[in-house]
Image (cartoon, rainbow, N blue to C red; front, side, top):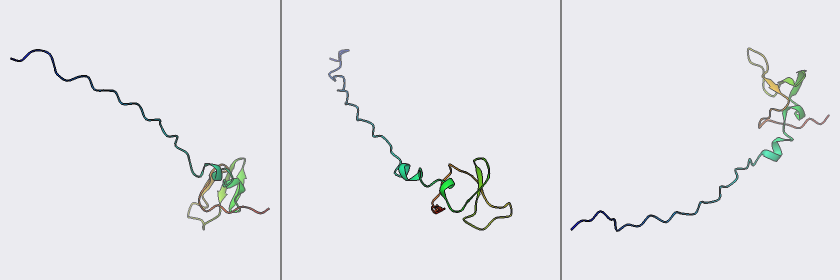
Length: 78
């Protein structure tokens, strides 16, 4: 005979795993590798400048901000 009760118990809740903090491995290095410290950066107006790392395109050199950074950074020794 079938009754209205279930033989299954409520599942045991699993403990929550601690969430790992996502860290940027370049976080500390990118602070010193910004365009404002690069030898290829030429400042034009306030915080805007041009990156002269590669030859210009038809629209000129790329416009960058002082706080931008890329993998072609080379420290300016001035």
